[in-house]
Image (cartoon, rainbow, N blue to C red; front, side, top):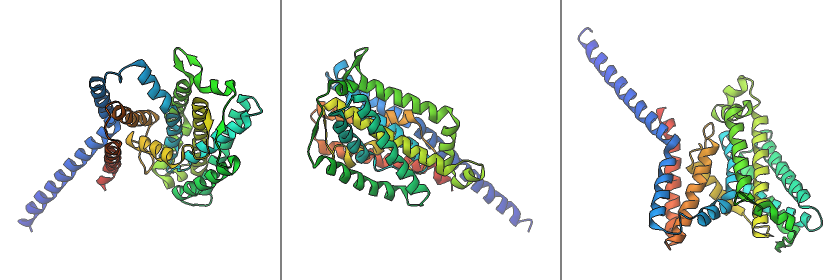
Length: 335
C-alpha cells in the first residue's frame, strides 16, 4: 500500500493542477467576455473612420444615434427581462401596436395623451406577459411569441392594414425637437438608458433582478419575490417597447401595424446578447446592451457607406451572435 500511495498522490495532484489551470483559463475568458464587446466596437469604429470619409462626421454619427434610439430604449428594457431569467419576443409587436394606437389617438387629441395611452398599453402587455410566464408557468419564449401574434393581429384590425399618418406638429416634436444640436429622440434614449442603468446597478430591485435570474430557488428561499420581480421586468420592457414605437412614429411621421415586428425583436435581442447579457439570466448590464446595439448599427452603417453586399453583413452578424452565445456558455464549463 505504501508503494501505491505516492502514485495516487501524484495522480491526484496532477488532476488538481489541471483542474485549477482549466478553471483559471475559463475565468480569464469569462472576464474577457465582460469587457469583450468594447474591443471589437473600438476596432470597428477606428476601421470605419479610416476606411470611410463620411463615417466620422457629426451628421452621420447623429443619424446613427437617431435611427437606433428606439432600439436602445427597447434593448434597455429587454435587458432587465433577460437578466431576470425571461425573454420577451413581443417587443416588436408591442412597438407596432403602440405606434398605431398613438397615431390614432393623436388624430383628435393632444400628443401628450397619445403618449400616455401608448405607454399604458405597453405596461398592460408587459404585465400580461409577466403573469402568464410566472403565475401560469408558461415558458416566456412561448408566451411572448404567442402574444406577439395577438398584438400584431390587433394592430392590423385597428388600422385595417392601412398607414396612420402623423400630421400633428406636437407629436412630431417628440423626436425632432433639437437640444444642444441633438434631436430629442437621442436624448430620450439616453435618459431611459441612464435611469434603467442606475436601477439595475444601484437599487434593491436591481439586485433582485440579478438574483431572480441567477438562482431562482435560492432567491425564493432568501425572501426575494421572484415572480413579482419578473412581472415588473416585463412591464418595464413593455413600456420601453411602446416608447420606442412612439419615438419612431414621431421620427418618421407614419405608423403601421407591421412596423417593427420580428425583425426589430431579433435585432434588439442580438444587440443585448452581443453586448454580453447572458441568455440564461443572472448576468448583464445596460451599458453592455448600449455597446452591443451600437456595434450592430456600426456594421450596418459601415457596410452601407462602403457599398458591401448586405448578404455578407447578415453572415457576419450571424457569426458574431454565435460567438457571443458561445462566450455566454464559458462560465458554465466549470461544471
